Length: 272
Image 1 (cartoon, rainbow, N blue to C red):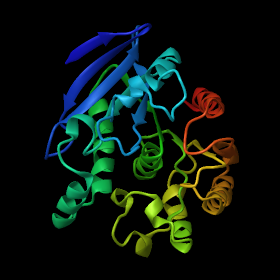
Image 2: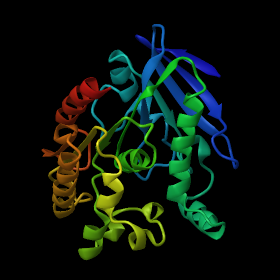
Image 3: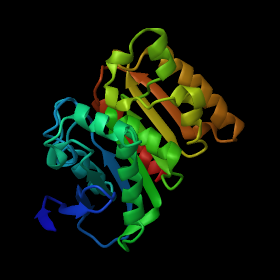
Image 4: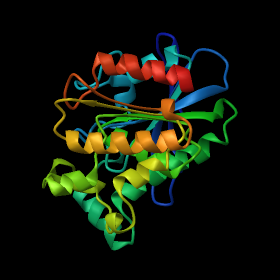
């Protein structure tokens, strides 16, 4: 384990055993005080740059608001964990297309394996005394946002879900021939024969969910955003918690704006 001290918080680096195939590099940022801490899982974006993965949480990116998520969240009193997704940063050296084909040939999917690591990270956190595992949130932008709501749908241990620039309705993409607006890594064979996008996201209800997109984000088609917004609002209302679902289309494109940051910070304070 390597340790770095920052202004008001500490960053530890780990190699975790989250799957049977390879170790997973991880970053743990936490305030300079005693835990146990509520924890936010920061799920990094794609961006087409495979040299950056987990370090996005500390270094930021051109399409993310400043300061970094690590600095922002630790100042709020949260611990933050981030891992390299398959093919990114320290898990590089193999192309995303090669990984995709490799997993298909062995009865898996790249998207499923990326999600598996996120849920296995929660398994690991349950072994640590410095983490309050009853207070876990996920947050991410673009691919990280997709991972956020997918993981939340699959794992009820995630109590708060926040996704930025990631409210994508697959059926709407198909209808408008926009499937190529998203990377092939995201697609799972036979998915729509079993589920709709809405049905997957409804599994998060009634846990708190915040979804923020930019009005000019062509990767999150307005028609799909509105369809999911209406369906999820009805689902949360039916369960008796309409206030726990918040979906906003705001100024901007495929990015995190300062307006978005202000909104998600307030949402996180209220529910985590």
